[in-house]
Each structure stands twice: as C-alpha cells, then as structure tokens.
Length: 322
Image 1 (cartoon, one colour):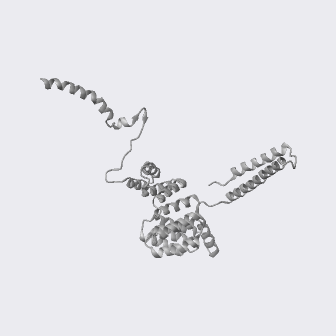
Image 2: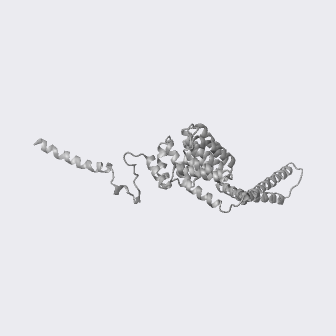
Image 3: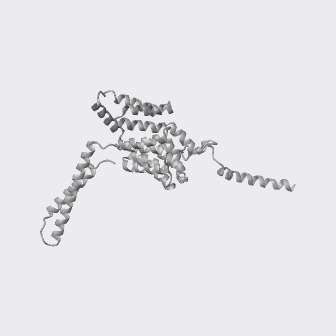
C-alpha cells in the first residue's frame, strides 16, 4: 500500500533526527559532572517553598559563612537590586573576617536603598571591623535617625562607641535606648558592658540579669556576667575597681593602635620628611646648575638621588598596616 510504503522513509527520518534531539536533550547528572575531563558540581536550587535567602539564613545559623558567600555570589550578580541578599553577604564577609568585602556588600545594598537603615547598620559594622570608628559611629547614628526607637540600631551605635573607647557616650546613649526598648536582650547586654566599663559593676550586673530574664538562654548575657566575675576577682577597693574598669573598657576596643604601631608610624613619618627634603635638594641643585649659577659635580646628584630613594623605600616599608 502507498501508506505503508511512505511510512518507512518517515521512520528513517525520525531515526536520523534522533541523534540531534539527543544532543539537545538535558544531560544526566553523570554527564553533567564530567565535561571534557573536568568534574563540576551541579548547581542546586533551593527546595520548593524556600528562597535563596532562607538557605543563606540557615547556613549563617550553622556557622557556614563561606558557603553563604558562594551561594549568594552568583545571585547578587544576577539580581543586584536584591538588598536583603547584599545584607547577608555583608554579614557572611564579616564572620569570615573580610572587612573590605563586607564594606563592598554593604555599600552595594545602600546604593540600591539609600534610605534603608539596615544598610547603614552593616556599613557601620564593616567600618568598626576595619577600624574606621568615626565613620562607624556616624553611620550608626544615621541609622538611628532613619528608624528612631529601633533597639537594633541603638545597640549598634553603643557597640561602635565602645569599640572606639567612648564609654561615657555609650552609657548615655544606651541608657536612653534602654528606656525606649528595654525589652531587647541584646541592648541590655551592651548596656551592661558599657556600665561595667564606666566603673558601675552592680548596675552592670543588673542589666545583664534583665537580659537573662528576657531570654534565659541568652549566650551573650551569660558571657558578660562571666567576664564581670573575672574582672572583679582582683578588686578590693576603689582604686582597684577603677583599674579593672579601665582594663575592661580597653578590652572592648577593636583595632587598637599599639605602641609598636605608633613607633612605626612616627618612624615612617620621619622617613617621608627626609625623602621630601633630599628630593627637594636634588631638584634645587639641578635648577641652580641649569641656570649656570653654580657648578655641581655629578657625585652630588647621585648622592642626593640615592638618599631620597632610600628614604622613600624605608618609609614605604615602615608604613602602618591598614
């Protein structure tokens, strides 16, 4: 029959097209992980009903900040307008000790949402981690103005002030914040730390106790009380209490400038000044020689230039680390 005779070519055409369809068909897991001898891990999407931010939160809760960075890196590249993703990226970078990466993520979030207090919060955190305390305090204060009464931002301002050694400012600001939001356990703990650093151990213990009353399992409150007990072991009178409070306040500071760094900074400054003087002398002598006012031997040029170069090199090597 004509129909039967025509069916064979159709089948042959389908068989000839089959390799092309197979080539375009999705690869299996085994094929996807072996591309030209290079083993790759397939990208996994979040389970149904969960978002990539949920996955990031779970990883952060389990202390897997590095996995969060890997998870969100491609996502924020595809969706740079996702401000909450940038916030989690900043937190993960901070937990990894990468202050510069955290600042980049926080600034990216702020550029997408200039009026958002949460972006200012993470910028302040990154500034504190990098040692820029003045900017950290100013940014935290701006966050407080953006969202007045929010204990999270009042707590960040107090932490930034304590990190810079401004105990009096921290106590004054945290006292107001506690009066407005005394229900926040984190705020009570930071207030307790500031009070102890100000030489008020009993009031500090009460504030930490209020934090435990709000949240009996609050780990920071328990650690704060343990630190208070350790600091009070050697206290016998008012002078020893003042010493203990000062040492406690110093322990709250971050990125402190040690004496060795100060000496290195002064030495680098001296080297820079010496370089300026010798290089200026080199230029001045050259100008006088060109104008024919004096005759300068070539050895003077070599000496001045070598000395200037040596001082510049030493100043560069002796500069304080960022």
